[in-house]
View 1 (cartoon, rainbow, N blue to C red):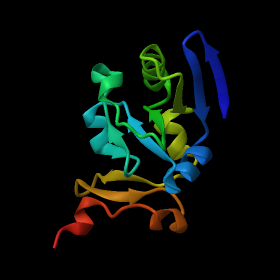
View 2: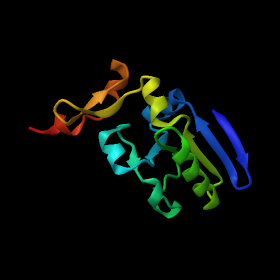
View 3: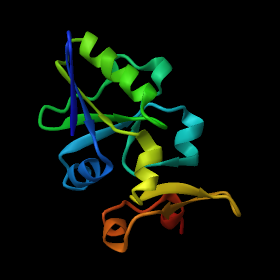
View 4: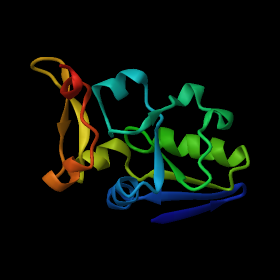
Length: 142
């Protein structure tokens, strides 16, 4: 984890391995700050969506026992939102270093769109990681 200390507090940049481990253990809440279109096309299963243009600290979920970790495409928007969190008085803000691009490159599991048929499906990751993912919407359709 990389740390950056600024006047308002501390920005933590977590690696994909650190985020995956903490997320699958239920220790963090992931917040995707990309656009709804980006989220629909591909996202980390279980991540909440709060797009950067609407990002305000009062909209964040209250999780006294869990760290909030932000992510975007490559890290620029999540860093901006982390600074918004600090300005709102949170003291510590965390982000996925390198964003969703780094998550994919690290071969972590995610939900993507099957471009052949336009449906969501599990992508990336190893079989063990896949077991930790909730089933995508199409697996629930009877």
